[in-house]
Length: 206
Ligand SMILES: Nc1ncnc2c1ncn2[C@@H]1O[C@H](COP(=O)(O)OP(=O)(O)OP(=O)(O)O)[C@@H](O)[C@H]1O
Ligand SMILES: [Mg+2]
Image 1 (cartoon, rainbow, N blue to C red):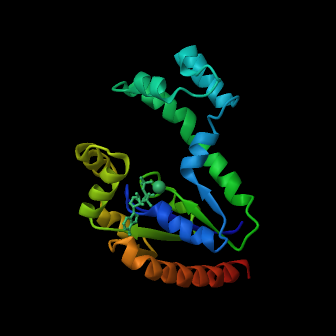
Image 2: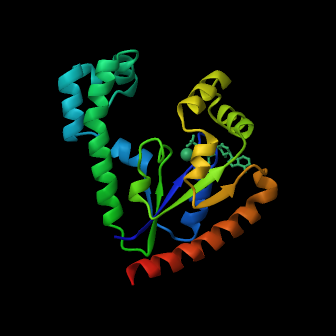
Image 3: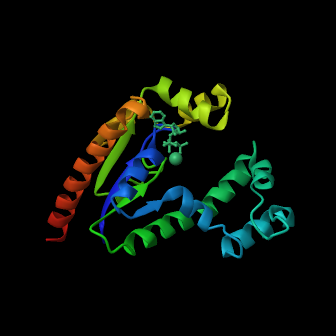
């Protein structure tokens, strides 16, 4: 299996921004958010099970998952939420592992917002954390989706603390500076990390 670098960070920290800089260098990626959508894509066995359990209103006219309808079913219903998680989590994990194993490159970037929360560090050879001040997270995340600050704060509280995340990190990229001033620096930092991951991945295969 390729050398796996887990990339994580709190909501709005800049994971996607940093992942894009690795993509510029041609680094392949497995993205947990994408996998989570793939396992319930149109025609998938899991989507059929969801429709069987919660009813046909779980499907749109196009046969896709009606996310709003599903969210309503599990909202404040622990039992149904647990049922759904028990269905989805093993499938997502299995698909992530399959995609990681299919990579032929020296190393693969494994982008997972809840890497630490969901104990996925065990799948990683190395953990890279994008770190910003909580104020920065709050500001950028609420700006982006015009989300209420209270909602972002709630999500931040449900995620691991900055301290715990940093404690799990092998490498840290600080992303507090404004992109207009620091993009070149971030790109340089990503290039340095890229070189070190290439070297580490070669040690692994020896
Ligand atoms: N250094 C920066 N300066 C200014 N804005 C930034 C910077 N880094 C990221 N942003 C902006 O902040 C927002 C959050 O960044 P990004 O989407 O990369 O974070 P994320 O960690 O992937 O978020 P999420 O957890 O929601 O997926 C985006 O709108 C992005 O354009
Ligand atoms: Mg993102």
